[in-house]
Image 1: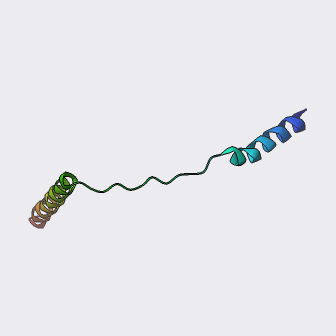
Image 2 (image 1 turned 180 degrees about the horizontal axis):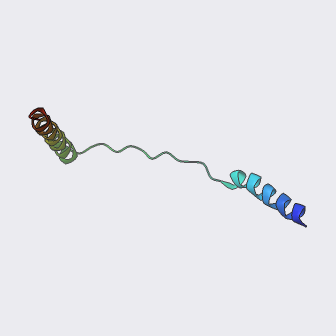
Image 3 (image 1 turned 120 degrees about the horizontal axis):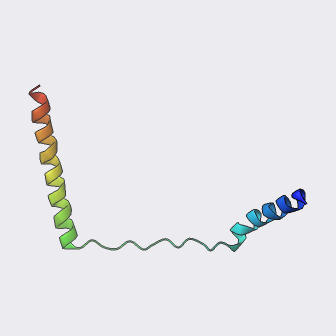
Length: 60
């Protein structure tokens, strides 16, 4: 009984990929001008934060 049950489980596991659907890649969307503005602002803020850390660590 134990071998029959394990055989059924193994057959079910190997049959699962056959039932799976294919992966559809999402289409990339174009960036808007608003998104580019906020990205540029975030980049500038990151550079300023890194400069502030450099100044603070350089004083030690």
